[in-house]
Image (cartoon, rainbow, N blue to C red; front, top):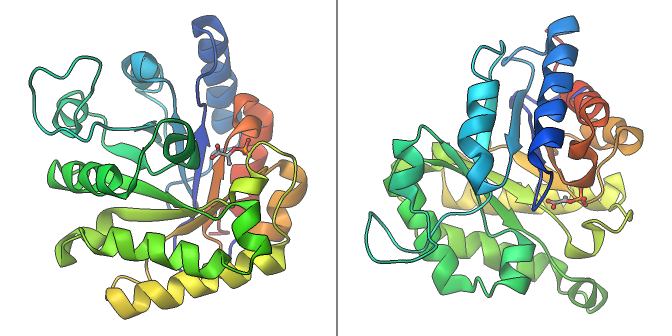
Length: 263
Ligand code: PEP
């Protein structure tokens, strides 16, 4: 159970999964678990990030779930508004479809799809200007960690964020620290290492914004029910961004339970 005053977030990143029927089953299972033993919004914000073409159907399926499960887009265009940009989905179009949350800067976007700092800054600005909430992902590679550069890399990524966020927009930001070497690999950062990086991020944020002590900093990288309790006990770990384990409703629910604050 999380100890700080920040309400934790547990968000399932479904990535390029699952097929429609499996997605609907996953939602039904999650709804059942939440109905049997609710986790309130004061205990934990729960969200799922499906593929873009499933955002609206997932939102529809989750419509009357109480407490609400947030529907999160996995990415947003670097282009704003509407226009001749084949294949893109802008922040304004997400907002127009009542999708209020978006991941930005996931390492798979950075590494596989060429989301460099310029693109990421444009995505952040567009999302915030369209009044979306963003979950901004940061994290170092194994090479960078082994070279002793992890902290410098992550703090630079926080500075990239700070370069485009207006003071009044900070309350719409959640950070996800995801060491790249821990994503989808089964290797998790130890709770001590994760806490140490989260504390550094918190320190950095506090120097930049008055929201620094209130910003949720999630951990991501092979989070499972088996390691969630230990991670949740760390004071600066305010939730989890969950990939693989979010494709199983029970695992995902157990992770949310591990982070949920006692009322
Ligand atoms: C992720 O993709 O954000 C992630 C943390 O994946 P996994 O939990 O599978 O490591």
